[in-house]
Length: 292
Image 1 (cartoon, rainbow, N blue to C red):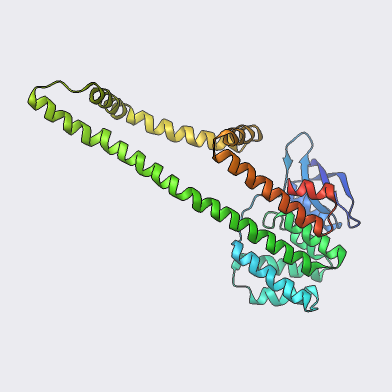
Image 2: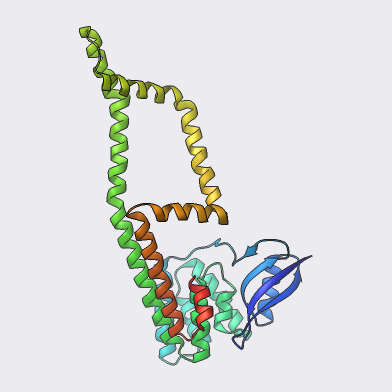
């Protein structure tokens, strides 16, 4: 039995901290949710903060947006939440989303608010979405909140696609360049050097340097390749730690051209998240916490 320090939201909109004894994180989370709390974070006493469960399942953004568009339309038409969720569950083709909606439907039948039913699957739905639904329920404008969230998501997806498209061509050129250099140093230049040897002439200095580099790479390839792969995996694992991620992201921000693009994208996402939450009625402090 472990003690967890929990940051939770009450039905009255207050954010409080509670200490609870439980066997595991999931047990503590389920007990708090059954009591009507919205769990924002769990921290095992003397351990690390656990912000939402890992995403064992994922949703396609297109399926998620389509579901929210249908839900907003049904709510705006005056359909009760339970009836709307039941209808969408039956029509849902995505297996993951259908199973989640079935669980949400059961929770609503038991009297759980829609926002808390979504929050129970915190590893699947973004905190921004859950907070928006919570605000929409309190203000009685759930359809408007959903439409704002849909617009926000579409804008962010469009921005990310544009950045990805813009980066594709330079990355392709870099790969081609590395391939050409490898072919030149590994095959072309060594064959040309044989011609010079047949003529009995001394190789140019630049050619000698390139051949030396080529020979060094070939000789060290048996240990260089595993070391390179191990280094990449090590950096990737280190980046998963808070300190490693802070260091790597700090270096990325210092890269010319790339750094300003990353910064502008982050600021844009923060501003749009804040606007979506504030328009939905979420308090400024809580909006900034979720957007951050």
